[in-house]
Picture (spheres, rainbow, N blue to C red):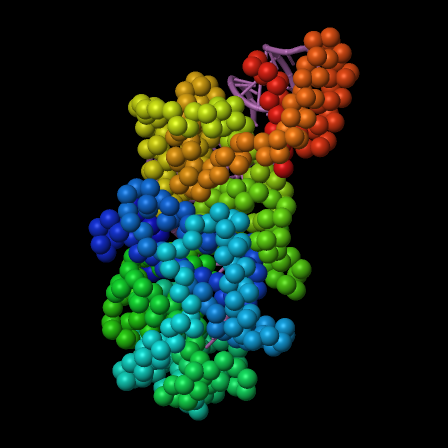
Length: 458
RNA sequence: GGCGACAUCGCCAAGUGGUAAGGCAAAGGUCUGCAAAAUCUUUAUCCCCGGUUCGAAUCCGGGUGUCGCCUCCA
């Protein structure tokens, strides 16, 4: 199993700290807004990482934090004129709802920043004692000049940072790259008591504290979007190293950006889509397919056409699953022979190569094709088994059964029986009219040797 | 200005030295009353120039283009 490690810029053999156990921490949402389609990428990708590690026999502990304290939340609370805690609660709930809609398995822990304030204060105290932090007028900063490897993760040098600083230097800081550990509270802001007065911790401290607390010392994988590399993750590493000279995590994984029609998503360009808006129009599996059809580290371009293409691709899996009558064969015994095992091995070696999900998906298509050719239902079981690892085919009952109430279902059956009568009489005009009318209502008929099937199309 | 990534068929995309996976779309055949589904067949020498090599999409150099990061954005 190889993983690309941002820290070394290389694919490395993955060796967990503890054999058979994978501990991972992925930076979660700041709950000041509904999350957007770009945020869905790390959620879906690391969901797959967890599922895959479990599939190959590991116990996985995944932590995804909730940042419920931050400038953006404070701004939102001022805009909407409601307390910060209410903002946090509202969007935390929305986060979980949207994750569920995207069929993302919840993490094992969802620590909230506000629940770890004391631990953060303790860490800052420790950093101050070790002379990695200094206080100026109630604000506390981390001193990057004292941090030996600062910039290693992001490949930046302190000199370059200084030269290229595009924001006017904060005069209180000793070095422009020094970052805030503790922020003095302004009027009306949420605040906690600390040795430096009333205030709140900075963002970079929470992840260090919560990851250590929940995952113990050095853990295996720290993940997030590539934009977090600098400064967030760099700063986490610096704090961890300064406090106990231990690595925070062994492997740093970062997913690439999502662009909209080639441009960065932003409110000013008016190309900002929330996940919940996208979900209103498209199936979660199509969205998942879209993300997983490209390697996680590459930038990915979002536009509606691509989601439509993805929907079509996913639909083809379901065509096969329907024709295989999956719901009826799913509990039947089956055995994998060498051919099945070969497909499985291809899937595993693709995933072992730094989570090459695009290749893994192509294996699913190979399996589908193999089933259609042989009608060997073991292929269907394999398709489901491997598809599940990528988070597909998790809700077969609903997808494959036609969810009309009994009366409507009977009416469809009735129309089909009329149509069959017309067909027998070679009254093609009426037979086609029934099929077309039903099609317009979203019900598709399909004639097979065993009779007429019908499906509700979304 | 500094650092970095990427450029493969109409679209999406895998492929890191051995002769271009897969998906979507399109065209044609089989099947079907016609459809749908399925199936078979067809469609690229990998941005440009130069180099290394028996051999390069894959390595090196030089262009061109796109994108990202450079203080709280996944």
